[in-house]
Amino acid sequence: MVASRDVQLQDGRVVRAYDSEQGGRAGVLVWHHGSPQTGALLEPLLAAASERGIRLVSYGRPGYGGSTRLAGRTVASAARDVEQIADAFGIERFAVMGASGGGPHALACAAELPDRVTGVVSLAGLAPFTDEFDWFAGMVSPGGLRSAMAGRAARVLFAETAEFDTASFTSADWDALSGQWSSLGADAQRAGEAGSDGLVDDDVAFVTPWGVDLSAITAPVLLVQGEQDRVVPPAHAAWLQRRLPKAQLWSRPDDGHVSVLHACAATMDWLLGL
Image (cartoon, rainbow, N blue to C red; front, top):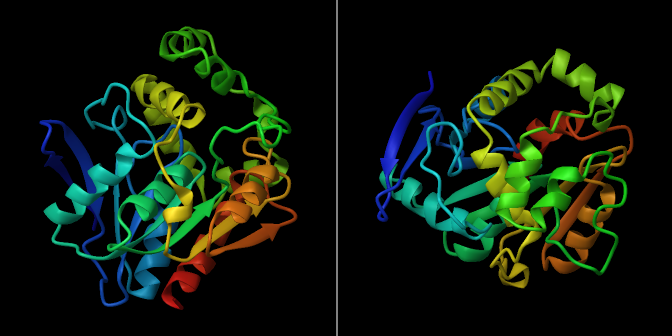
């Protein structure tokens, strides 16, 4: 049974958080959702965590799933929100895991909350925008992120006519969405129907300075990357591995952007082994 709770933050905003209320003997894992998602806990994650005695917590980032929008938020902003959610739930130390757009926010928590984060997993996560490699190369449909470079107004304008390019996903991704990860597709649809604020603010945050010092991350980091990913290409994980002090990279040759999530159970085992 998953409990949802609206957490009042110090600045007056509200974030909608979710708690599996099960496990805990093996620790707590805070999940950072992709873009767009509502923040609700997905069935494959709940099943894997329950089998391992892990308490699973998540939340909707500002602008998603009932959480108040935060104008001008950065990737680093997530750390302050997660810190207050953890306090509200009586959680002192926890691991973090994020997929796709959630990956940068999981890394931000590790950088900003070094005394509380025990380990980090980023699956198909973006690297900070940089000219050290061709950041857009290999993305089938980078229009949203490119428009965000011109600011929020430009990204909002793009969202008015944007349509998802089905070529962004591989056959393995579509198989995952029709099978084990069908709940992810349904949740993404709910998030999209609720409006574009969260996604727009995510994209602007990704291509502007994160406000995060990656070299400050002291917790072990696991990067998981599908070599066939057409949304966040492998060069992003390779760049992150070179910049993070304690990073391992699991490269999955046959996976795309969604099918890489099949590794989630194994990454939980990795966290338990720290």
